[in-house]
Image 1 (cartoon, rainbow, N blue to C red):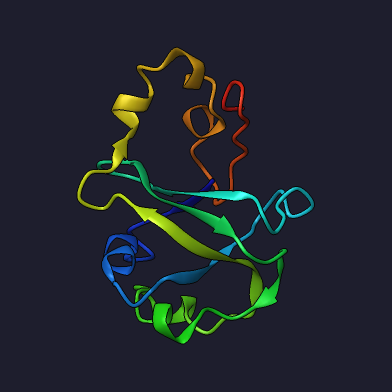
Image 2 (image 1 turned 30 degrees about the vertical axis):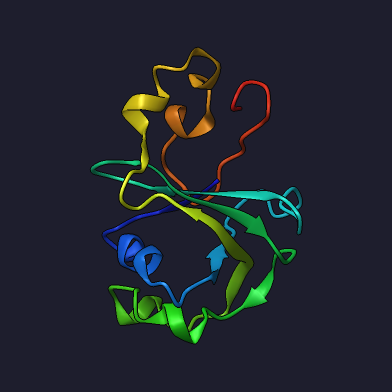
Amino acid sequence: MFQANPLRYAVYDALADDNLKEDMWLVSRYQSDIREGDVAIIWKARMRSGIYAVGDVISNPQMMYDSDESTKYWKNASDQKQLLLRVKIRYGFKFIQHPILKTELEKISELKSMEIFRHAQGTNFKVSRRDGS
């Protein structure tokens, strides 16, 4: 799971951009676990937090810059054009009009233990097929 902080990155606007089919996402932890072929869940933090997109990780973590298309969505110039550990994600489904909100996900007993519910600080979170941890 990749979490976007809308105070730093206009994730809603980026996902609404029909030209943005792929994007680079930061990898701040679990770099040895995230691999090409993994499912990527895009989580928007803060108000109306939840799942806003799902896609495929199409690269292993490596040092790279943001794409030219997505650089404009960073809210601070200091976050733009930085060489950081990232993966490339190809969006499969975008739920920007009807996200799967945290308030709904918390009602599903099998998902109550998801790491993002316990420790929402960070960029990357593990999600398993069984219990969300």
